[in-house]
Length: 129
Image 1 (cartoon, rainbow, N blue to C red):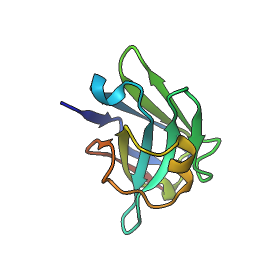
Image 2: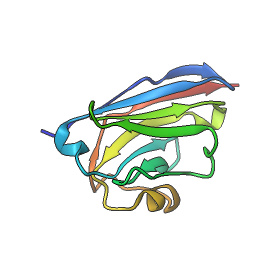
Image 3: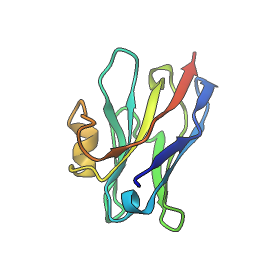
Image 4: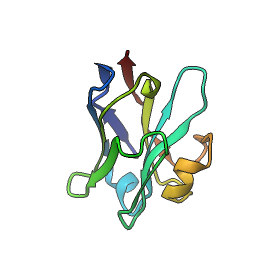
């Protein structure tokens, strides 16, 4: 059974930090392009950060220098460290695996469909000004 379980969301003030985790079942995690994707109210899903199977990471321009994606292969866990958070970062954040696009495409191609890959249930991040 494929499972992706996000945790770590919450409410912070602008300038604060949060760290998200995504625990994945081995099937979803193994040799898989993984990503963090967010959806703000009234907006399309957008790729925030993604990591290729070779470990190379890509970031959306809006989060470069502030977010860091990483993974712990021993724990089948994907992370997103978020610093200097802004109100516009407020969104539901989803972990996704086994996506059919490259990490670079995920963060640059625009609205993303859930028709492909595996997705978690999401964790809410709220940033107040």
